[in-house]
Image 1 (spheres, each protein chain N blue to C red):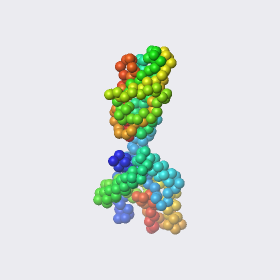
Image 2: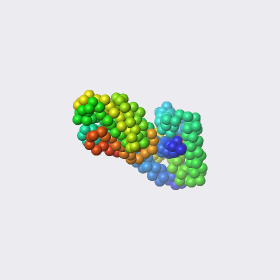
Image 3: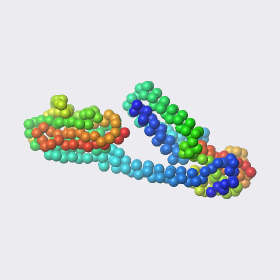
Image 4: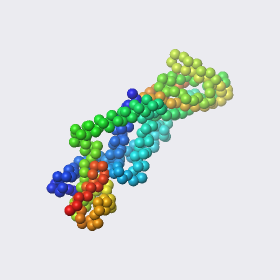
Amino acid sequence: METVFRAIAAYMVLLVMLRITGRRQGKRMTSFEILLIFLLGGQMTQSILGEDRSFVNAFIGVSTVALMHALFATWKQRSELVERLVDGTPILVYADGRWIEESMDMVRVQREDVRASARGEGIDDFEKVRYAIVERNGSISIIKK
Amino acid sequence: MAEPERGENIIYENVPFERRWMRFERSMWLVLSLSLLAASFGVFGRGAHARQTQRSAPLTVEYDSVVRSRTQTPIVVKVDGSATQAGHVRLLLSGALLDKARLLDIVPKPASEEVFEQGVALTFKTLPGKPASMTLVQKVEGGMGRVQSHLGVDHGSSPLTLNQLILP
């Protein structure tokens, strides 16, 4: 039973830690971000399992984390507040020729990140961009004029 | 700041929420920084703040007042020469040291061990009339909260009470 409590605590701690360390693009993680995920996960594994290295204990830990994940996914779906708390909301960082500095600070995005996303969309002139939005998963969507 | 009409139908941004979240994020960074600072001083164990010394002649005990579950911590027991006149000293242990923790190692090894109703007695050979020092390596098995142990010597003053906080 201790493994279950430890896994629940670890899940909650990691959820908050990942959320407060900012948005990151899952598909395009840099080595800087991989380092964060890898170390956070590694540190927690040890505390969930403790000294019991048995398969049964690992199974209990993994099952608890999986159930917590399913529970939060369902809760997110049913509650807009929980969804906002867990995933955040999309943030407009560029609109109609104007950079929105406050929003850029909130999501810690630099102008070059937005320009890179525009280039990725095949845009050769930033004047053609109408909106740039930092999505909940950290990716930057570009909407053309 | 975004104006409501801009891309409203596809973006659904919630700037007031994100502002509140940013304040929460920053307060959490402060909490984490303060926690790390506190940890470096031993507030969560394994630091200068956690280390305590208790003395009641002829016994002096150095121990961690905050211990982490499943980690090893040393308890250093020093006995004045007045308690070793007979060439041995008998250390009496009881309480959480035996109930909640395991003694992984005792250095030096006791010459004999006896079990009595409240705890155990460890007898160490010593040089007659000379001070002696023993180290007990404690490992708390689990749980959390405040626990008490008692440690004394035969024919000495009343046993010392070691108060320890167990952290998960």
